[in-house]
Length: 215
Image (tube, rainbow, N blue to C red; front, side, top):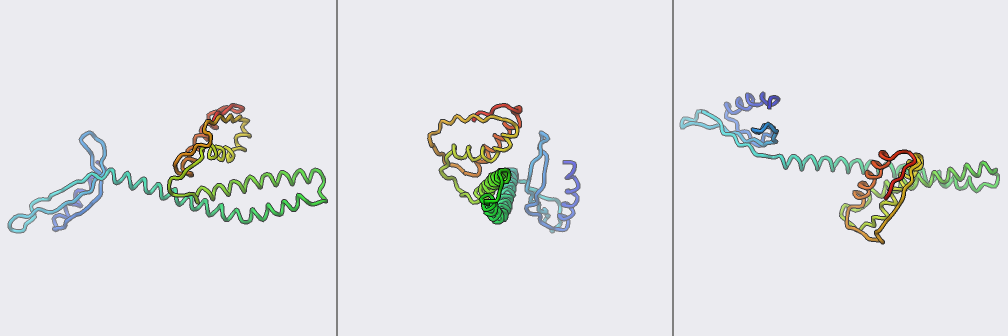
């Protein structure tokens, strides 16, 4: 490729000095114009007098390995993001529990008038929602790294509960028609939850305000 042309003079200069180049990773172009990840092994060729008269180059196709490496890096980034989310959820959860306890005590105060009791009830409701979200964030990370039996109906319901406020704000009606009868499948809990979450978000963006999403 044009952006790799400058590699050749550097490589040939090293060969002239008798160096062997092993596992030099680069990119080359196929006859059809597509690019190919390669690992190069280049050795000097010497004559009977020990003079360097040429070079031998072997190029190995490492495309599959590169794809695997990219997938691994992506997976590691996702795992790091999960650890960060779990840490934040844990740090938030502790003071959140204290606030929830204080609000409960406040709601039971005999000195509150009707409006104060209404505000206290609203605060309790919102705190329960935030607590639920932090607990789910923690469960995403704590789940097994191996496939386990998962109740799909429960997973869908948990995803819907996360986005309940956003669904309500847009006036969307959710119709649930399950035919699972408690059936489980063997899968990754966090992964399958992410699948349904993505599908639901796409549906929420696609449907008009006041529309319906059938699950």
